[in-house]
Amino acid sequence: MSESAGEVEVLSGAAAGGLRWEVACSGDDEDLYTMLRVYSGQKRVVAGSGFGGPKLRPGSVMSEWRGRTDDLPYFVMARTVPAVTRVVATTDRGADVVLELSQPVERFGLRFAAAALPPGHMPATIRAERDGAVLEERPQRVPRPFPAPGRGPHT
Image (cartoon, rainbow, N blue to C red; front, side, top):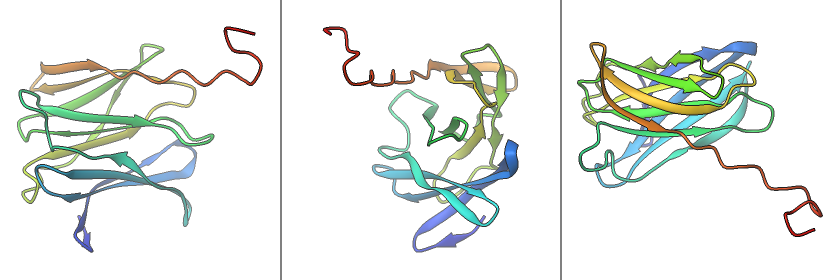
């Protein structure tokens, strides 16, 4: 874990195709930013994609994000209460992907999780577990792509 300019690197890992990624966090309980950076070799291919807002919503044990850039795979991230012991994303094709999970990060009072989904898979659901028991599960809706010009429902 490293820190620079108020930002803390909380997690890092690798993905298929020689990609490596890191998750950085900054802010406070009310306005916390969790950002993903992806590298191919020494080249940064995702400068910073992620989410902000309260560290967790009331009554929730997890905040989550999913996104994709260009021809890269979908990435999934989450921040959770320290009691969470596993975060699993299920893809649209039914594959379970266990996210890398940080140790609790004292500065934020959270754990962080992230993973790349297999190529061609899209996010469907994500769940936070504690010792095999599901604490929270939610859908990960992916916006539909915009129709090509001239191909909308009214043409």
